[in-house]
Length: 129
Image (cartoon, rainbow, N blue to C red; front, side, top):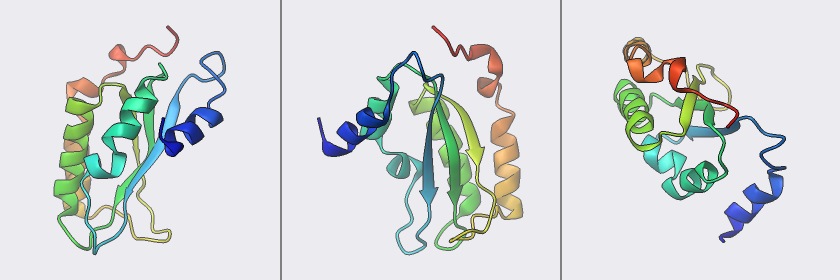
């Protein structure tokens, strides 16, 4: 087991105490633009999904500098829907903290369009199994 997975497992108290697992995924460097898949990390995702709890991307965002923010939003939401079925909720960081993650108008429209996809309905979420 890689060290990062050992650290994650050490912080996980067990299914009796955890209903959701939350992670952050930020595309924050305009000089090294990353896709949502690269930011989220397939190996970390598979490991977290193996813990048997729904996943929430509790903080996701992308800077606008360095690429197409609206395209990044669309690609991220498509990636979550198609490749990460355990992701049941996504919370977009729309704030200027250390980096400016505020959605430009086109990115805001892309997020609104993606959020209306029927796949994101609450009917498919079962927290306790």
